[in-house]
Length: 107
Image (cartoon, rainbow, N blue to C red; front, top):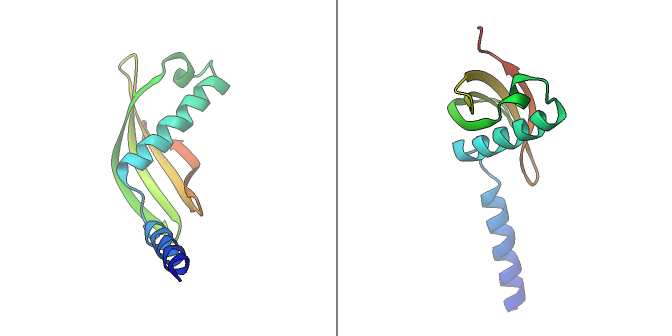
């Protein structure tokens, strides 16, 4: 009987933990920083590869539709340049995933 209560409690905690429609800004920062770290390794000739990302600052987050979020962020590079980007993130069963990005510096 006690095992059933523990299993029920674990299931309830998993359901409540997965209910967020928009990620925390800190989660988005980690996702974007991790993506651009991989991007710099894959494309070393770009400005993201030549000057690594020092900091990511989230400007705003907006839900596009269920499980999709549009994030406006600023990337601070190590050489001092500031880039504005638009990112789309998707909610998966185990967390948020980076889908696409667009450089909005010139817009």
